Structures are given as C-alpha cells and as structure tokens.
Length: 257
Image 1 (tube, rainbow, N blue to C red):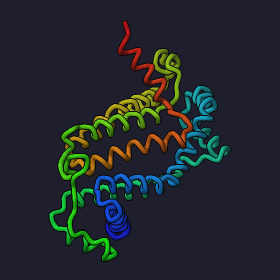
Image 2: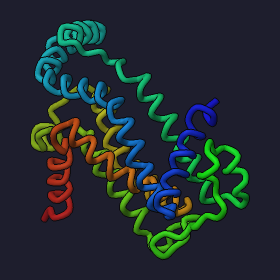
Image 3: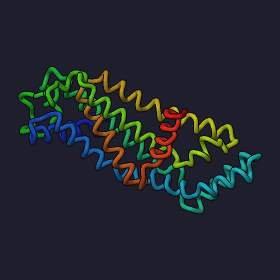
Image 4: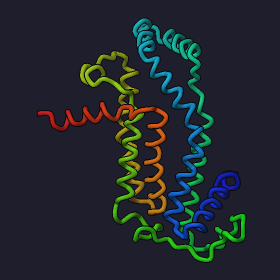
C-alpha cells in the first residue's frame, strides 16, 4: 500500500526531474525541495500550538507554582487554559504521521535508484513510457551516489543542520534563570528538560553517522532536507528559538577560566 500510494508517485516525480536534468544528484535536490514544500502546510498546526504555548508560559508556570502539590490539578488547569486559548495538544499528530510516511517513501525511492542493478525493475513502476530509463548516471560532483560520501561534506552538513534544528526547538530561556540558577524544582520537568537537551546532542551525531555509512544519494537527501528544515522552522517560529542562548552557554562553558 505504501509503495502504491507514496513510493511510486515519488519515483515518477524523480524520474521526471531526471528526464529534465539528466543528473540524479540535482534531481534528488529538486525532489527534496518539492516534498518539503508540499509537506510545509502539515507542519503549520504543530508550530502554531508551540507559539501559543510559548505565549502562555508565564501562566503555565504560575499554575505549576500555585498547585505544585497537586499534579492532577495542574493537568486539569493546564487543559482548561489550553481550551480557552484554542490549543489542542493532539493536533498535528495525524499530519506528522503522514509526513513520516512520505519521508520514508522518499528515502526508499532514493535508495532504490542508487542501488539498482536492473533498470527494468524501476521502469516497471514508471507511469509514462517516455520517462523510462535506458541508462542511469550515478555521478554527482565527482563521486558516485551509490557509495558513501568520501569527502564527508554531506554528513557534516546534515549533522550541523540537525544540531541547529534541534537547538531551535529548545525553549528560549534565560541562561541565568534556567541553566545557571536552576530555578525549577519539579523533578519531572527537570528530567524532561534533561532528555530534550540530550537528544539535541544525540540527534546530530546519529545523523552524521548515518551520513557516513549510507550511500551519497541518501546522504544528499538528508543534507538538503536538514538545511530546508532550518528555513521552514525559522518561517514558522519567527526566530531561531534556543540557538542563541544555548550558543552563549556553550561559549561560556568552553572558555570558562
């Protein structure tokens, strides 16, 4: 079902771009941009909720302080506050699932192109005869897209871009208020905060590792997609989120005398 509804249409779009450019690397870039543009509206509800919750942070903090001994009451009051301001915590879940399936389909198509040894298998899923492949050039910027990136450029770009997007999702906190003074007393909040911070580090490391081990065609997709994610998040958030404060913190930690 996934192949019929998602993979095959993506495969045909990539084939069309290759028909126009005769360059698989450029076709992957164009396809990634197109997919990101199509999926952009699906990201809007989630980020709208994030912005609303950010605006309500002082009120949410006040509720935690007022009912700090009653977790159930905090939850009830938070849900009431969300309802008053039109925030649905579960909105965007379905669209995120759709987005994940599309990205998986995109990955599978690119993987199929760069690892194929039989073009007739690809041609069998192409809708139009004029898009059928007689040959396929896997070279892009001096290297084969079927092999890992020997220059490490794509893995580095993907890793750095993922780090930036992860930091953008962190709260725009005051370093003195949250990190240095450690004002929060809630152990669950501290644990969630700690896990979020750890994932900010782990995600780019994993992305970099995958970029090293996967073929350059997939690495190209990951790198382009990661850079485009920065642009999309900036458009939706209106700023770089936690990048600036956490960059200051890192500098302070590194150059602390």
